[in-house]
Length: 130
Image 1: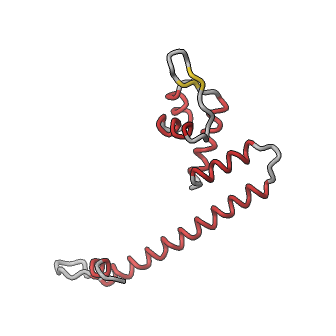
Image 2: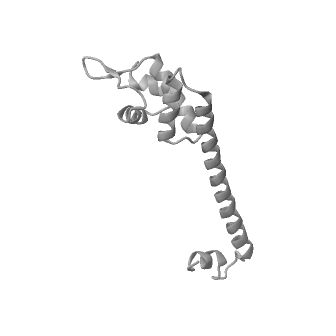
Image 3: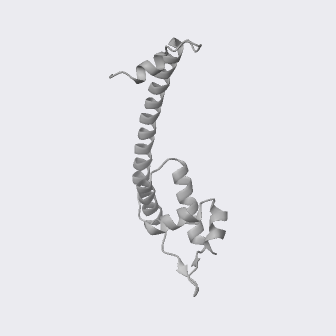
């Protein structure tokens, strides 16, 4: 399959596929005599794995770790679970940060009159050294 077909099957852009190949997440594609990349079903499966992992927010580095574990028939599921647990902890930290941002903005919005006056506590808060 050429890269356009693989892109259609996986929902990953050709540019991203080339990037994943360049950083070693997928094996270098075979080439036709005219230089076109040619991919197989295993490449499609690997790219779908990458897409699902990225969709769950795993970084490219974490995806590389997951792929290594996926390919290792001697792996211990505890390793996979630990990687996932670390990722969940990071998600929880991000959620807490977002909640804090929301609370701050909500607090400031409640104090903003939102009328024709120039005074605005939102802008005042952004402009202070706090």
